Length: 213
Image (tube, rainbow, N blue to C red; front, side):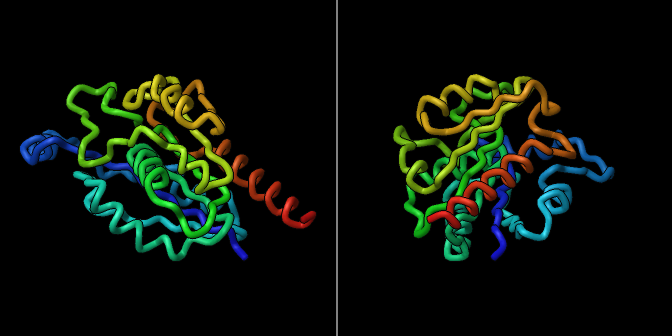
């Protein structure tokens, strides 16, 4: 049976509709193809033993936690034991909040939180973490929902300061924390070999453990 990997993308939140409209008016666009590690690269490098599911969360440009939760709830019945969850940026704090407030029917193999903001202390002025994504004080349920928790941050991240890594570490003492010197800022890289190696390693260890039981 293939290991399913659910990848939750990032997004933006705004305090008011006025802020959102101003952002749209000032937004710079490009027609060049954007190559991201979470797309074809991840599929090719992980190979045929994995099935990657990429839910398109509602209105990522002006996200609301409640809307994302309603949509993600629909995928929970498809989660099998030892599947993997990956959340990038806003997708990371979404998974952190969801898994800390909802007991999954089956325990996941691992969750990867990549550059997830912990709170509203972001580096870019006017960049606000609102829309219901605020974390609760107790994140311990995450450790019951998954066997492995991986926190991945980059020192040169221009959006989520590296200080957020320590805040997560305090709340999730059993998590594995990996801090990279550089991932082109906010993990804007076309390739991500480290996460491929981590995923394959965890699946291999889990499979070998299962055979010895």
